[in-house]
Image (cartoon, rainbow, N blue to C red; front, side, top):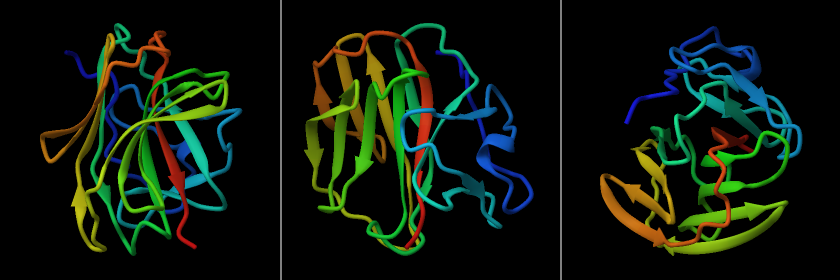
Length: 176
């Protein structure tokens, strides 16, 4: 499968995500419906939340509705302060997509949103630790939605409510 988005978030600190250009298919647009607030590049070349929650979709267009969304997540202080989500098949005009979230209950969750209505599709009770990096992956293949962590499948769902290719995206929430 061809890579249609790649971004190392290397840029000047405090550059807003929507003003940053990554390596491949990675100019970022603030989603108009899903928490459209600014995020920025950190001094350590990481995307992070700024003044509220923000969802950013990539300019890269997937070749089909079957693709992976993956990233390295660095946990600075803990999940109750800042967080990042992976998003696949995101509509550019509505709150409709598949999401991988590390929720406030302390577990990873596979979610779908359809017109702003969120439904949990499965959870994995893995923990995270400050100062650590994690590599979650969301796989959106036909009617198989899967979450992988450290290369191991942790959640699987046959839900196929969101069938359009949409865009790959990131969701950022700042540290408190």
